Image 1 (cartoon, rainbow, N blue to C red):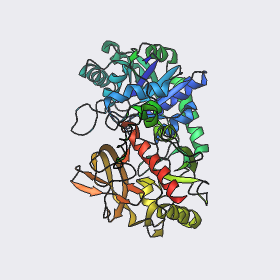
Image 2 (image 1 turned 180 degrees about the horizontal axis):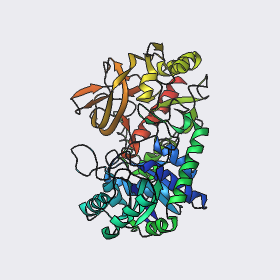
Image 3 (image 1 turned 45 degrees about the vertical axis):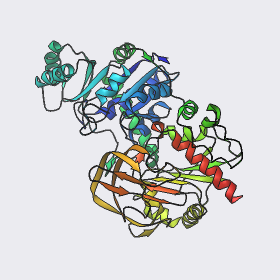
Length: 484
């Protein structure tokens, strides 16, 4: 790989400065010029990439140095940006805020350095004038490896206010590449876990993205921003590919040799990448408004491992897709749609029946709630003997995890990094065979492993461990053979 795609990282001194508005607006504004724009988001956020996808017409992808490792950030970026004219990367939190206790790891600054990309700093200037120069100077000089190529001033009150800000910044050496006036917030409503996902309000979201683009076009120097993006350094190394990632992942254990027989032949690279799968073997992935959290690489890895990946909507579909032999239920907001999910009894029974058959089922966070016996007092699928409810406390943070039990996703003792983000509680928090052991914020076990089911609060990124997808598909093949 030698990626020279022009690219910008949109960062800010802190959350709430306007990163999402500027990044999404830039994506849409450049796309309206006919450019193929690759959208990216630093960190584990699932919601912002939905708005990015709406702005660009391309899949929004995450770049997370904690979940995937720093070595995969550039290859995953190159995979998403292949064939594009420009890439825009929205940062997370403040520019230098990373994983707790891990220094710069997974911060926007860390990712910008890994991508050799210039940073555009979005500053909320609503309550300052000359002090903005000290703020920008501090951020520009804090880490000499981070190149802040320009600043966009947000929430500027008037022409006089703008003049004061520009005068103060003249001596900073950081050019002003945009000024956005203090206007009513673009219509992107929030609730307990951030913005409302696009899938829940598509018509309104289209209008919101158009408003962001108009605001950015009116206030930003798009030509200067594109020129800055073209100054990004070339990236050397391999472009991530799902099939290649599977081929390079550790091979599955060899079968036990039969006494008196010949020693088993180790699988070659092609066999490791794509196990023998029956035609039509389907892995169904939950989607729709209630289950919007997923990483695009998961479906790509499942397909590379030999599965036909199909989506279904638990709010609307009364049956699983015909031929389903594996089920993946990711994150989302089932608590918002609990009455509708509960009312869809045929699908709840279909999910429970598939789980009883021993077919592989992987559920993360929202999926765990859906598989539980009930959610906020309403019947769910009853696959897991636990009750789920909303809670006022936010559980948030990266986790180092160890698989406690052998499952369709991992062997006991395997290590994975994950992320928790929810305002719900499941009681009990773990089954007889727990899914994971974690140490932060306290040492505990959590999640459920039973038959082919793996259900947990932990969000994981399979690009960090491609063998997870291969193991899951192999278990689907085994389940199919047993059922047949």
